[in-house]
Amino acid sequence: MGDACKDWSKWAEDIYWTHFQTFHFYQLLLSGFDRQLVIPKTFSDNLKKKLPQSATLKGPSGLTWDVELTTNDDTTFFNHGWQKFVKDHSLEETDLLVFRYNGWSQFDVLIFDGKNLCEKGASYFVRKCGQTEHDNRCLTKKRLREGSMDDVRTPLDVDAGCTSPVNSMGDDSVTVPSEQCINSMVAKKRTRQSARRVGSKKPATNGEGVKSNPSDDVADSPTNKNGAQVQQFASNRRPVTEDEIKSALVLAQAASSDDTFQVVMRPTHVYKRHFLWIPTEWVMNHPLTENQEIYLRFNKGTWQAKYFYNRGRGNGGITSGWKHFVLDNNLEEFDVCLFKPADRMDGFFVLDVSIFRVVQEITPLTVLTPPPKRGRPKSIKSTKPQACD
Image (tube, rainbow, N blue to C red; front, side):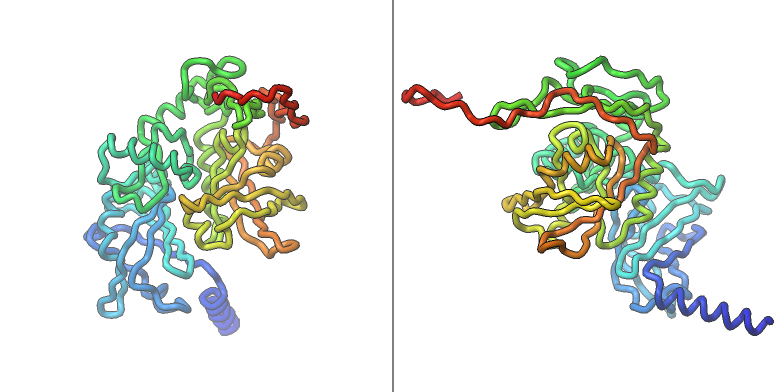
């Protein structure tokens, strides 16, 4: 019986190392951890592909750090770059780190407090050191103009006006909320503009939740380039908590892979404008460098949409058709969508969508403005030149 168990255990180990796509290990931080960190020998020896000379550490916040891997006496270490990861996360001796390796060159890291054995909440709100507050705001505004705010991968995905850029070199298009922003989000959902609000008065949250309500985020109803009023919606969902927001993001991150990208829903995705930017890096690695029709699939449904590519900026997003997908599937602010490319359908690019909801109960939205009329244009009787606005 003992030999049979040993044979089964060996078989299971062989299956794990030869067929699994991701692998996990943990390390307890001991003295000297701030200089370098050992990678378990069993892990490095059993990988199908040899570990690269450099890798990326992805923290709970979604930000990444580049580190070098060095080998000494058959032992591999996280070396140059590891020190910055330690500093930015304020790691301490006896902290416990869980690493998830994707099989290529990235480690997803979860951080636990060695004193209470619970996950460190602050690790989800880390920002890289090296910027002044002034630089943070300037670079954030630049990214907003470039349409990159949907690259944000943070639990709250808060308003860009109080976010800070990832690093001073500008090589990451990810932003994270400042401490002041986090506190204000937990306390209440502040308005972007204090004057000329749309809809009913702002709901109170008394510090227990965040109410999704686009009427607090915009001034007068926007119009499109033809002067027609753009349709907007208001949420009737109950106030959501910070833990619920975090839980949806963590579930999405656990389901993600190298070929997926995720977007935390913002008001501009689900309540107004209805446009979704796709992360630039993901666009460049897929056949999405021209305008085209695409399909979105969720459960057993399929939605046709248009993809717009901005050649000058090298990024793109989903335009018409996205609103129908949002409304038909009752998407709300802070819900997380995970997108994965699938086999083409009728020659069109297909994205399979997974939805991670903050609140499972679905409450229909309220229409704030009617849809724009699409009647025939009025004829111009006068032959005089029209004055430009």
